[in-house]
Image (cartoon, rainbow, N blue to C red):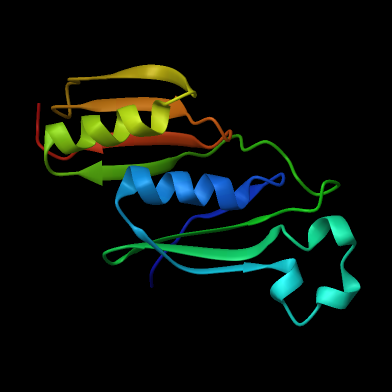
Length: 136
């Protein structure tokens, strides 16, 4: 079994995933808009450029997402996308990149369980936890 986060956006999915690709060092291997799908003739004109599905791969890890219909979109709550990295410098670099124009809810710092941990909500509204797997 493999669990993969699937993020929903309110029209910003393509921009968000280009940002995540840069921050996380992954590669977008698939991005399809509604206008490129077999259902292109059934979506409103304003939806043709919005993302129906995107897949970002980082080694064996995958992050996926899409734009939600406005009536279905809700701001993420009660969840975080959690990233664990071995090296403190790498974890701090990713934390700072994701925090750009976002909101830090817990600064990246040493904790009793880790040599570095922090929490933030990025500029697209996605909550993240970045953890260094090296012990404190």
